[in-house]
Image (cartoon, rainbow, N blue to C red; front, side, top):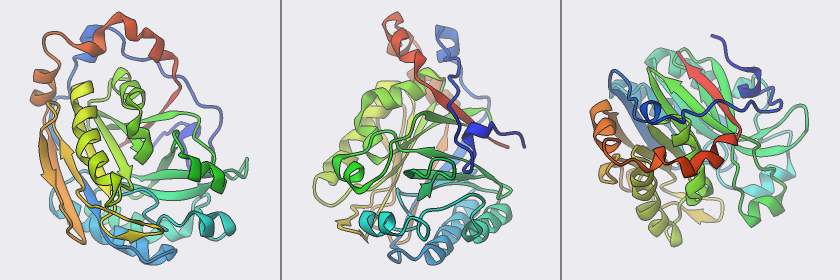
Length: 309
């Protein structure tokens, strides 16, 4: 498989600015066939990467049994949301190039023929910077690349994490899927940038807690879906992780903003949704805000592309 070097977990070079699909015909284009995507959640073993990899592998198997081509898992799923410990031992907890701790998960992907987007801390081998990332493994288990969270909150910056330099689009079975991590989804322009790159869905790995996170989860999913006339899939924590208690509700919203799947507080839990080209076509018919010329200023934002064969 050919993947741009800038998208690989072990080589984040200067991001490439992709050509956005600016004309109305491209923005209204839809895939030929449906694809099934799953959002998973489960309680974690704090800072125990092998144990959490095993949990991720079990969720991949369940997603594969449900016919999902891709599984999305929550933010920092492989360690839990324990920022001080992660930063305090940057050579122990963050993932590195070709990290062997991912081998069990890679094997599960290959058996299930299901790709995975899984949250983890990553240490950039060239710059030494720490990132809150999602790592992408293909349906054959290949390490395809990563996306680094672009919008870090004050606590994440203070802890020592570095924001990502570029957005990221996955190409899967004719679909274009934008990636986001938690607070990214609070910025309408983040999902908009993905939509202007032709994405028909926005996949978010999150830590929404049982306080303000309940409202965020209820509002941001349908808002980003309705704003951009595309699907939103959110994978959220459902149990204690670091200082937070996840509110669960991993699920999916359709292009009209309607809730289609909800894992509730199940632990482990899985929400599976078929992404339907016809639903996107209906949402993008008629007056389409994405096609307004005033959005041209968004097109210069750098993005990377990861292709899932």
